[in-house]
Image (tube, rainbow, N blue to C red; front, side, top):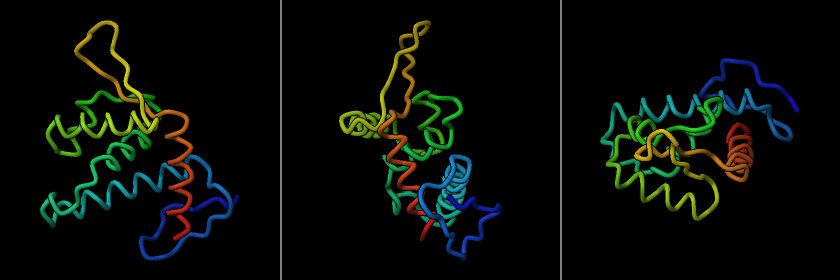
Length: 131
């Protein structure tokens, strides 16, 4: 696997053969988040309704924490909690994420990516870095 060098130019394609290493994949996802935030600063957020994708990217970038609260997920996405919950249910049904209750506070639900979700994101991010 060819390692990427940082920073990645937003205008040059990146050559990736096989699956890139985890650090480069996460860097690519972080770059994607920053680009999406920049886009959202200039256009109405309603133009880009990809809540499920935003959830997957947030979990992927924050994988070192292993899980995020639904509140932490909803803050940068800026959609109502009901929308977050609807998409979390969809992602759970498709076995990409799972939720766990916090033992010390039953009101708090943590969201984490499943192995299938992580592998799918690895494959997707590798493909996106090839473009």
